[in-house]
Length: 480
Image 1 (spheres, helix red, strand yellow):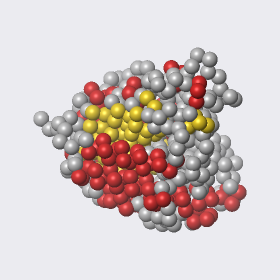
Image 2 (cartoon, one colour):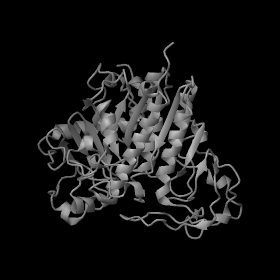
Image 3 (cartoon, rainbow, N blue to C red):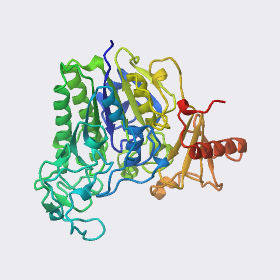
Image 4 (spheres, one colour):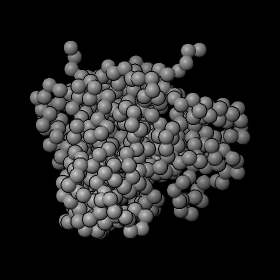
């Protein structure tokens, strides 16, 4: 019997489409390891996260279900688990196929913090609980171990309390002091929410430690007969932008660029660990990002002439392409042809059905309802398997993509504030919707809704159908 492949998903945080060298010839950031990964595998140019923000994209990636069928926002400070009780995750699926599973990095999908809160715990303000209002000796339910991962190591969210390491379901060191950013980020704001912090906690030591732990875990898999799944969600280059000293000055795009270069080095460390353990040829590696770059990207354009969104319009949170069109690279030696590029439309929501097909798992009809099996694209049997995809971050703005056409349900896709010097480059849209031809206008400058009213009506009807139907996966289509 053929051995099932190991699976590694590397998930950057707030990395833009134009931050990676193999996606942007004009990038001011060196990304040699990602560029090499692309040369060794398939680079997708039309891949999308489910949302323009963190939690919803992670939910969709790990379930194969669009976040907007349940929610739109992030898991906030001290919020409970985001997954529904009966929701199958990728880790649970792979466990059932005999995989060892680990999540190392940013979780941001909720824990049952109330299980370790003392009965009389009360916040100072809305969410600011002091350290002494928790029993840190107790296990924290509802996290990765409750959703298919045998092992977890991370800090949950880099700018949320508690600021300490969590291993499996317990804190490693009890946080005892109030949060204070250390070091202060050289770019942007630390964005840290108030709450308990462990003494000596340093923001710039988070990514190095996550990298070390991931490499250590991979090394431990050498010679094991059991296949493994490692989900490594980075905390970088999300704010706080705190590149390690070893990478300061590594780019020509300021501290953020240096942080991206450091993220690239983490990819290199993982690839080197697979090589050293003799696991490369047996391992499927997927790299992507949860959404587009944060609003600091506008000042980066002006100061360094580096475009984190590349040719795309918009940033994180926006329904413009720059909010959710992300880098995606897939390497699987001997199966996915090396040095190939695909312009197939693909969503991260598709990873669930694709991996289910790879490992021979029959997905139940009430799971992964929006996931398309992209394996025929990966192996070169088909050019594409999906021609439509819904884009959404918040409840009031939607995008409906079909083929070359993209319809925005409102006059623009903006959510993040746009500086005047950027906004003046775009003509005002007097219409209620915006229709773009992405083949001719990837930067989404021209509204064609007036010229093609029939396309507007078709896409409006399709969006309503997909939203109301409750699923969009091909395996769940009714017989016609």
